[in-house]
Image (tube, rainbow, N blue to C red; front, side, top):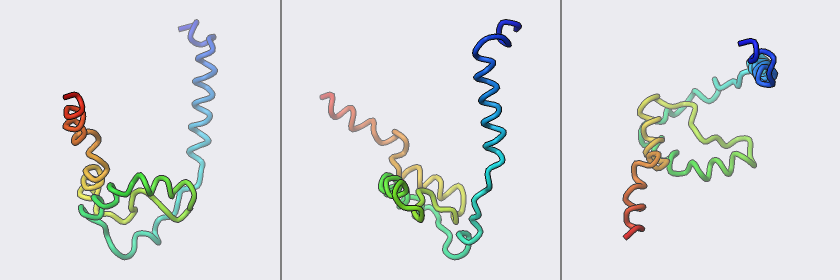
Amino acid sequence: MKKLLTSKWSYVLCLLLIVVVFYSCINKEVVTPCLHGHTYGFFGGLWHGFIAPFDLFGMIFFDDITVFAQNNNGAFYAFGFLLGSGGWGFFGGKGAKWRRK
């Protein structure tokens, strides 16, 4: 224990703790104007999952583009987004098997 406190890892941990403390002081993003109007459900999440790579590219250059809709209905939107974005590898297995043959 004494060696850990005097090693370079103690400096790294202290720096990490300082970063976390200051990061928690950052102003929160106000999303209340986004929460009025149309609520996105499963099919909205599915569509947003399909176009997520393009949204990510656009988000780099424009401030008014986001990848994930703030005004969504929760779990169904998230499930649709997951499936639309490729299912995180659930659908990629068949393509990999097809290439091996």
